[in-house]
Length: 229
Image: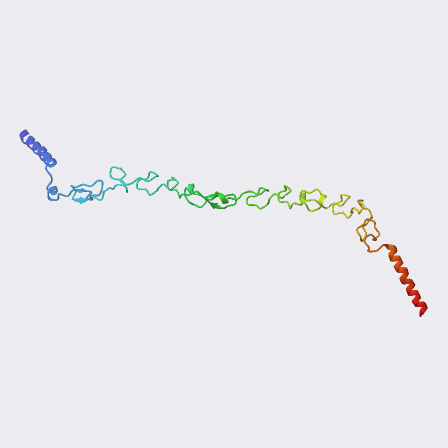
């Protein structure tokens, strides 16, 4: 009886072991292997016969090991498009080194009057009043914006002393003159013969008493004619 019982126990154990070692009749008839069947996936299983929907893929521009496979831009981004501008600024717009004409690293400079060019010979300057591009100048009297009047004498002479139009008394534009006797303001005058205080006789063709005799003769003749008539 004991022998029969032991035999049954051993038979059961052997049957259990065989189930674990040998595939079931169902596995043998349906050899399906689940897994990722996409060869581009990181977890591709070349043994799988049926895709299980669990394929995993690398991030764009990276491989399955996490390494960048594209160019790295100036910002350090894998596959990025940022570039250094002409000023050396990553993703810049060239404005940080542009001149007044908008040219990167250009030579144009805006002067104090707002003119932008590369010609410093036409840069505006300050006038005497300190105004950039102004037109005020220093006049002959040394006055900024003056009209020369501050140093023009009464005779109209720049930096003059009024002597050019003064009369004999030193009055600018005065009317006092020196007479023919050399006296300032005197009343002596030249006659028709150019003689100071003369009577005009010095330049006549005859002497005065000659004219008197002629005049008496003419009067006498006229009187005699009257008597005759």
